[in-house]
Length: 289
Ligand code: PAF
Image: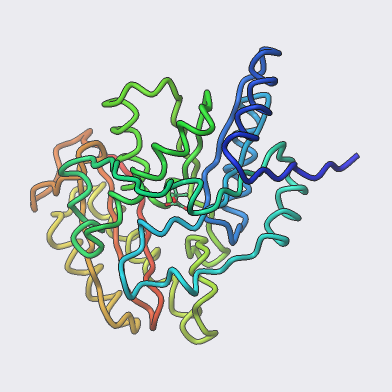
């Protein structure tokens, strides 16, 4: 029988429901989201289900990770459709806290993961990773999961959360879920819905350019040459603004030197660019052969 998840909106109810599961010896798997769920999210939920007895998904559009003028007010809010999709994939609990539940009146505590939050996306969205780390730390305290799953599509976010968990000693296993792509290679994202048909058609240039650059660097091309080529093809496809294309160390997220990488070096290539009003990000891992 297909069972709808139970919806919980307050921390006190969440605590009492999860306490019973814990007392019965059940492990808790957690997937934090901002809703507008797509197949990529559902694959993360399936991973959480495979790794723990009880699956909790949170849906919370977190105001502290949006800057003034960003899309907080227009961010898609699709609770009923989200619950229907979570029912299909199988979820025990959906946590839908209010802003007051997550940020009690007069809240003054933030979490900042220094340095890593100020690179790449952090240069263009300086508030962003502070908001993410703060809300994820709060959600971890609310849910107290054994395992939490985050998409590799948001690679910088994933690495910052791993670092936060390590630094603060959260007893949580952080698992990265592979990026889910449309047939033409575009990474799935809730914001893809903002693109019109013409923009959507050109949007996969970003994944094609990253794919080509990583293949070239993996067989010995210089990082700077491959990046120049990737930048040129992304701009030629009609992306109005290219925030960055970078090849970085996968742990520290710091830029790697411009020349050819030493054999065996593991790296990550990341990009962010604007297609009309939509900011797209993508990334891929590779190793220098
Ligand atoms: O990746 C997201 O959807 C959000 O940044 C997260 C992790 C749910 C925090 O609000």
